[in-house]
Amino acid sequence: MDTSALVIFLERICITPSGCWMWLGNRVRNGYGRFRHSYAHRIAFEQWRGPIPASREIDHLCRNKGCVNPDHLDLVTRSENNRRGLLGVLRQQTHCKMGHHFDAANTHIDSKGHRTCRACHNEAARRYIEEHREYYAAKRREYYQRNIEVERAKAREYQRNRRKQDA
Image (cartoon, rainbow, N blue to C red; front, side):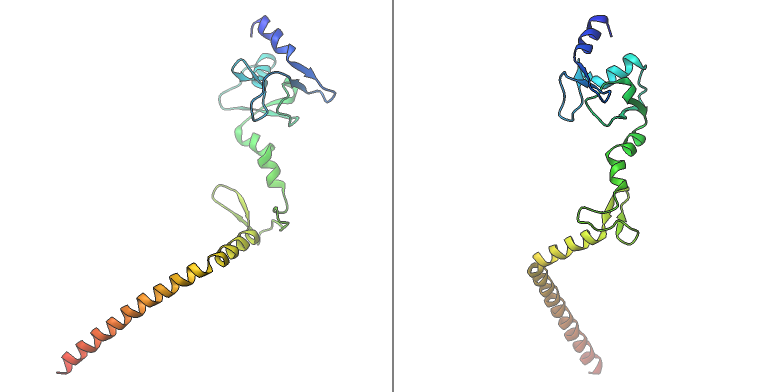
């Protein structure tokens, strides 16, 4: 980064008592600062700590997306960044949103590693069936009626064949 760009970059920083260098410039919706078509924290890391390999991401150790302090930024893999961030926090939860305990009997883990509360899932399934009870009852009646007619037709065919064999 040339000297004039570095001066402009530094003018858009406010140092807080916690040690964060808060980005005062433009921010995108996700909370990260933007500077000249790049994320501000990435520019700060490259300026003071070195290049960022393609296989790595920047993790905010202070958990503050607006911070550009290179001492608060760590170079990590995507899986490590996810483990440290929100996904890591979610894995530490001991109860679901409804207060059911995440234990071996009450927790389903899907193929992507996401946890689901079995009690909440079962309750949602019961509510769905209750709300659609008449629809399913009509489908059952239709199915049984169709099968009864098929069974009666088979019985009549069987009786005809028996009569032919007896004659």
